[in-house]
Amino acid sequence: MEAIGIVLIKLAFVLVFVLSFGGILTWVERKQSAIMQDRIGANRASILGLRVIGLFHPLADAIKMFLKESFRPANAEKFIFTLAPAISVFFALVGFAVIPFGDKLVLGDTVVNLQLAPLNVGILYLFAVAGMAVYGVVLGAWASRNNYALLGGLRAAAQMISYEIALGVTIFGSIMVYQTVDLQEIVRWQGAYFWGWLPAWGVILQPLGFLLFLTVGIAETKRVPFDPPEGESEIIGYFLEYSGMGFGMYFLTDFIETVMIAAITVTLFFGGWQVPYLAPDGFHFPWGSELLCAQWVVALLQVLGFTLKIMFFLWLQMAIRWTLPRFRYDQVMRLGWKYILPISLANIVLTGAAILLIK
Amino acid sequence: MVSYFGNIYRALSTIAIGMGQTWKAMFRPAVTLQYPRERWELPVNARGILFMNADDCIGCNKCVRICPVDCIYLDAVKAAPDEDLGKASMGNPIRQHVIRFDIDMFKCCYCSDCTTVCPTECLYMTDEYENGVYSRDNGIYHFSKYSPEEAVALRLREKEEDERKAREKEAKLAAKQKAAEGKGKSAVGA
Image (cartoon, rainbow over all chains, first blue to last red; front, top):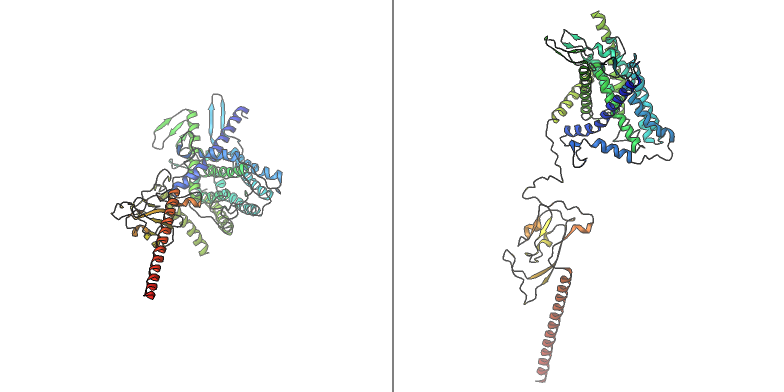
């Protein structure tokens, strides 16, 4: 067991990491969509005339959300209506407890495991948490006593539970390869090299699994192109009756889930905190040269590498969100049940056959 | 079965095409203009708000008659016989006081016909296009150089003049009639 102080510091780090990513994503969404549509994008918010390419917009958003009235409809279920956004954010956040941000950090005598909760059933925990996330949505939709919100909630329940199944099945292939469900162990496994130079990242062993997982993951975040639950152009969706910070929390949940999907994708398929050729004592390049550095530098590089990989997948998810048109409800269901689920089952069979042949 | 895998292939290939398009778009420069601070340079023949140079208007009424939407309102008062209003910059003599020249820019269809017929070229279109106002009344532009009081005075003068002329005419007519009657009488008497 680690000292309580270290755990608290790690907790603060993870919270700040995730929430600042969630906040900055509101800026990234505006700015990237603008760049993709030949516009300039958010650049109006300024402090003392300082604009910093619109980076103050998340701050302005937060202030606006907090200062607005949190309106509650007269017939809403008071307690659950107030609680639902918090449930939503809570289950989006707790998933990060098992994400490994780096290997071990040695500071004198203390060894800090750069993972908030070293859990040996990491992936199962993640799925449990992701499965609970639907409660925040459905309860919020039901408690607001609004037909459109309820429609959105029903769609969210159907979509998230359908894709939950596909989410589990897409990962089986990876688990069969790694032979473990501990996320830290999975990342360590990916530190090996094929033929001495190619990093053994999951995407090389499980390309199909990666594609399917990314698709299902994006569907789980309930953002365009998988947005019938929100359906901003038709029914507004499950957060229809929310305003002020209640809406803000649902909004934040979307972005935190985006970060979550990026983090899981990186951990399972892109080597987590592994930086190519970085061993615990420094770089060992395949052409023989070495670059040794202190242990804390290695730990820092690992966290940095993990962050950069997450940023790439955030960018990719944003690019997908602003490229593809949204699905109709029946199309979402057809894609989930008739395409992704059978293909991921086939992926399991293929992976099993490959493992048998190689052994 | 074939259509199933065909669907998958089509989905993946079209996604690739779409992502390629957005990837290319990421390197194109933005076309947006930061509007209130930057503006497009307008072409030389741009049609904006109408402007009338009151010093040159001779009150010929041509613009009023050609306007397809009747958005120009013009009232003119004849100059007194001993008054010299000078000449317009094109040389046309000015013979009327243009006491009212209003253009309703909300009615205007920007056809630019009035500027074509204007003989002194005092009516033209500016490159001003930001004519949003808070009240419909503010959309009517007043161009006359006469103040309302002056206009009332001129109107009154014209009225008096007209009445005087009418009286003179009447007197003339009466005199004529009298003369004719006198002639008749004398004829009868003769």
